[in-house]
Image (cartoon, rainbow, N blue to C red; front, top):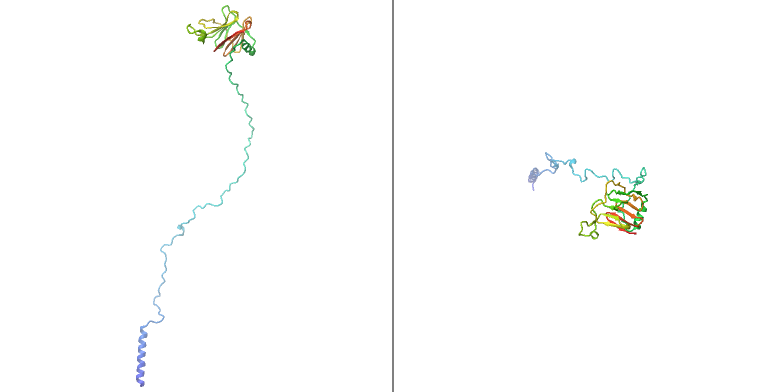
Length: 235
């Protein structure tokens, strides 16, 4: 090969290399405006003051503010000893006076009264029973009004079926009477219950009680009771 064609070939290859170098980018291109890194910034940052908390606003303290102190309280001791009041219990109300059925019972009642007999020919009790201890008409006692029903004794056909008076009959025998009349006369003194009244001779004695009158004839050894009921008995 001649020298001229070799130079021409080299020149053509150089031009080709130059053209290729203009078309390829450089190995380290420097951008005219470097790209800005995109950072994700939240549009609204939540406030820490509004962050919900699982802890209640008022957290109870594990330790109480005031620890109770348990101390033994002594029993209250009264400053002044109260003595029990001395209460007087009234005695029970007395029951009805027992009705004597024998002369001995009646004599015992008069003796238990412990009263010195007062002398009176006639008297009346606080309940209105009228009595004669000495009289030409009768010696005995009479209810103020009405009588004690006793149809078995007084009968059912007569005008009166009740006993209203008891008198000492002949020989001192006591007799119940179904009376419609009266032996009562005005002016008799009223004698208190519990008293004992005797005839001027002392043979007849009567004990006055709230329930009635008990009279005895100490000579005949007989007697009677007249009140809400009646009883007659011999010696």
